[in-house]
Image (cartoon, rainbow, N blue to C red; front, side, top):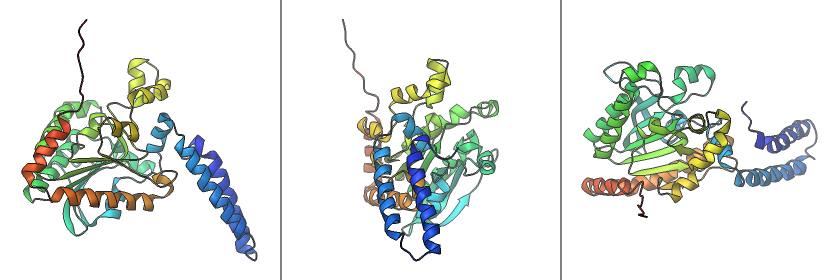
Length: 319
């Protein structure tokens, strides 16, 4: 079901607005004031509902079927996009899109995990779950960026890497680990944008960057809430409790310095106004990219090392 339970009051008002518009089109325009009043009411209710979302509800928003995916962002914020296919070893993994494009007339390499919009595309894209050849395909694009001195724009949106037997046989863990290492050492600016779900190593395999952005209602976690619940409680129904314990929302991640910036979304989330969401993200990427390309590459590498080295601090106490 596309509509989320907590959105019902909003949807009911929007249905009333649509009915009034149809009546107004057939009449003399006297209903316009009522329509404007209801539209203001929708804005107020939407803001109040979304300001009060709990962690699990934010997870549901991050998975909303109408939420824009990587390909839509790539097409909206870049020009002259030319897709690159295959890893030159096994096959072309359609769960990830790679290619060359221009961002504000600057040549860039783009990598985006693609879930798919309808059921046919979701199956084709394997629901955004990459195989080892997908990570090697992305790595091929990363190396191309380094060779030709182009920045990299990454769009993260996956529930996790594909856990099938075939993927394990072809070296899933090694492929992810290699990408983490190679991205850490890549001599090119990297901006990562988490636009939906950032699930586990499946996200981290393309998620190492000089700047990591996350949209307001996106999530980023070491494991899915359902997977965590299955391990800890042997009960998927405990996913809301697991989500709360994992601290996976954008504000929480920023508090722990796991992301660099939370990117605002339109009122009611990106799925309610994709065009506006894309424009906001483009402006943030533009600002961050302008800062990165001005840095000498050796300084960029030092800053990247300094960014990731302190993650996961702990302290020991002795009795």
